[in-house]
Length: 192
View 1 (tube, rainbow, N blue to C red):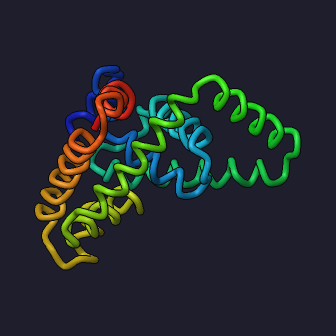
View 2 (cartoon, one colour):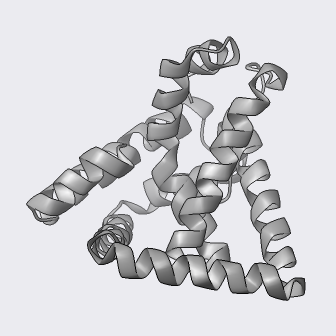
View 3 (cartoon, helix red, strand yellow):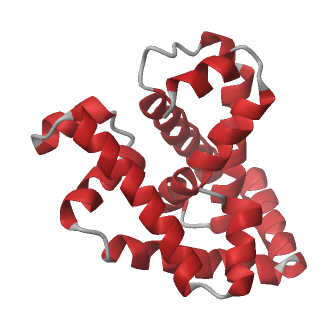
């Protein structure tokens, strides 16, 4: 994550926040979907996390790894939400009604989300092993570049390069193998 963007967001720059949101939304969505298994809930959780980041932006230290911070907030928020759903019948019923309403209102969005998810996973399966390892550690497990470098026995710069190349590869793969509507969906909603 570009430190300059984090600094600008911390200072209240909405453009920087939007850039961070667009850059991190796809991987955070996939990360949260792994835990909750419900696309609409994962999307809601992602929005909650970014809202929280905006609310506490003044407490973010740009000298510390932003990705690790973001993923810790996401994981904790997801687990708390799932715990509430497991113990609160009314909340669980509200969620199910909300999901049913979303599914009936926007079936095209669900199809596009499923197609994006399929293409995303296909892209991961076509990545070189080292790049995939870096992507999984940094984006799906929320590890910092330094932590990933130590685990894989490579330099921090190599990790950063693998991350840039992996995001570019996923983006290109979705555009290459998705149809025109998927390209528009990615451009309008997901954006790498």
